[in-house]
Image 1 (cartoon, one colour):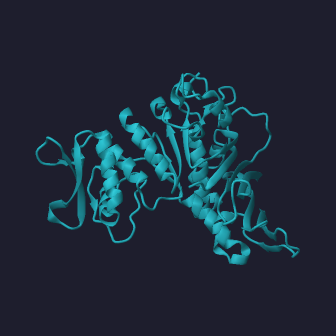
Image 2 (cartoon, helix red, strand yellow):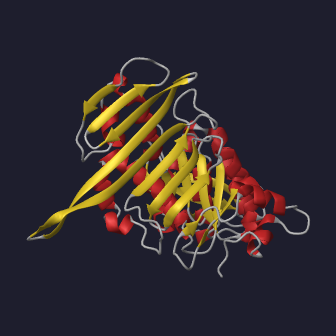
Image 3 (cartoon, rainbow, N blue to C red):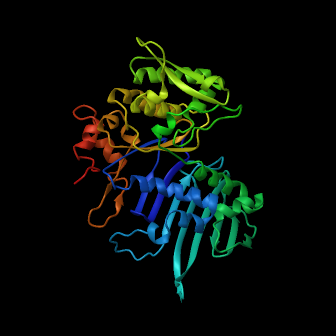
Length: 404
């Protein structure tokens, strides 16, 4: 599913000025420090702003000075700007998206006994498609909020709110005429963003018996046993498909078993039945790659995924033989959740389509990230699939995104 169409960032960490078009499946490649993680942090920052408000989100990310671009720049804009085009409302689409932008900066007021005094300021703009050919625009400057209905002759609605608060966190609590419904949907899109990074040590351990309601897999897979047990009970067909995928990726695996701990009904553990071996292998004794593969498959088979999912180091711990199945499942999962994944593996990139690849690099002279480092259409033109596959083309340096 495609929720975010584009994301823009100016002066945010290494993203001095980038605009990235996103598809259902997006795989980021490039050397360490190219800005892949910073692009994901921009989405996380908007989610934190929706949850906590702007000032706490800035502090959560280390303060304004830590967020502001520190590279060499000829631009004199002392503000950070984040913007997105997305599908939030019913009539929005790639050519007529819903839009949101947030610009914020600090203004120096003076000093006191504790040091320099600064005032946080921001502009926000929302544009939602409400009906065919019309839309709602919400503009916030300081404490002033204005809501205009495009295509209507009525006067804009005006009211005030705290100049220290963000509309993304505040307007969702107001009434429908004040834009709460659409703002709340936008905020939920950012809040749902999950960075999936399994902690293998935590995933090895037993966890609580699943409840009757939907179980959501933790971003670190700490509740892997709980999720797998729930999946086997509530979605047996999906569980069988996951088990079949794991057999493909882990030679010698027969099936997954779920066992209560010590006869208790309060915790459950995963065990592996392996061909040609007596007894069962507890997940705590399984290899790093097996647990990583199971965690990744659990995420990809989630019946109720968040709208946005990111996976760092997608191929970490996996044998190249498993990558065909992983890419296949990534495409399947992207029908429900928009995926942003990062990899350093040419073998994985070899299995991608050109429009699934986003090449990232960093200008060594300015410190600014270039994302994409090469226009997607140029990637398609350079890729023939005959002499060099996509991963080999990238690794050769022809597409950029490799260490200089």
